[in-house]
Amino acid sequence: MKQKLNKILKNKDTKVLLENFISLSSLQVVGMILPLITLPYVLRVLGFENYGVIVFAASLIAYFSALTDFSFKYTATRDIAIFRDSPKKLSLIYSKVLIIKSMFLLLSFTLIAIIVFSYPPFYENKLIYILTVPMLLGQALFPDWFFQGMEKMKYITFLNIGIKLFFTFCVFIFIKEESDYWIYPLLQSAGFIGAGIVGQIILMKKYKLKFIWLKPRIIKQTIIANTPIFINQFVPNLYNNTSTFLLGLLTNNTLVGIYNAIKTVVNLSITLIEILSRVFFPYLNRKKEAFLKYKKLMLIVSVGLTILCLASYKLVFWYLNIEEENAFIILAILASGIIGYTLYNIYGVNYFIIKRQDKLVMNNTITASLIGFILAFPLIYYLGIIGAAINLSMARWIMGGGLYCKYKKDNK
Image (cartoon, rainbow, N blue to C red; front, side):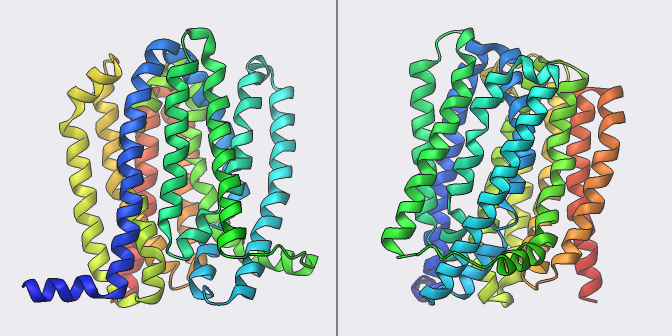
């Protein structure tokens, strides 16, 4: 057994996977601890209503975050993993990503300005929206897609931990009273922009990437080729983000704050699922035969995380000072969606997208997202915060379950 274990650990691919997992797991541990430190403080100092205003503004910006990324989290990562040994190809991919992200960033800034300044409820809190928008710039600059494709997750870890530590310390230093709620989005934006700039410097210094002005024809071809995965990445906002957005429109900011606080706890598990998925994505592009072991691992982890969420509810609600009478029901509904989300990562991201069946995944995601989008209004209108939770988890199960059925059919 010892010899077998040593042989496995000496394998080059195993070393890379372990290094990447340890890097992103370290990020996950810090990512779990720091929000759990700041969130109770923020909720007590700012109150659920002001926190709800911040979350509501972020829910609008989130629609444009998917637009500026434009599927590069998967398509650019896939290309970098394949052409990692070609400096010329790497510079070409880098330039395409930067140009297209810049185009969509300018479009996003314009549309957000029109929405905020033309709709009175948004205009009342225009400062929060203005301070939240720069996060898009930081996210566009941050080259996580490159580091993931090169399987150098340690850079993602260091930079993200840097963001979180900066944000955490500044929250306790600068946010002292309820009127300081505008500082929260300012700190978030500053952290993302700083990490994005440092990431770009690493690409130019370490990997010697050069920016190349490309012909419009190449940019157009790239946009067309990436559109199926972009749609697949964007349309989940129709159920995920819209649940929060409609909750703010149909109820009040206090319920938005409570809903987001509970969702934050569940999303810690979702983040771990995403990290495992991202660690294995470049590896499974090279070693497709490892899929079955990956699938088994992910299912075990997702079930364990769901049980953990439900078992720790008393401690979580006490710590976050949540006294909503339906809090456990909301937590249970949201936690049930963890397994559905895991099925999407297993069969969508790390099976069909790796097999380049992008349109199949896109069509499945569109169907699930449209169902979630259509049902969001009646569910939230009649059931309020519980309806928002039902809508989110139901859509995740439809999306993951649909791909599971397609996988079973594909492998008969």
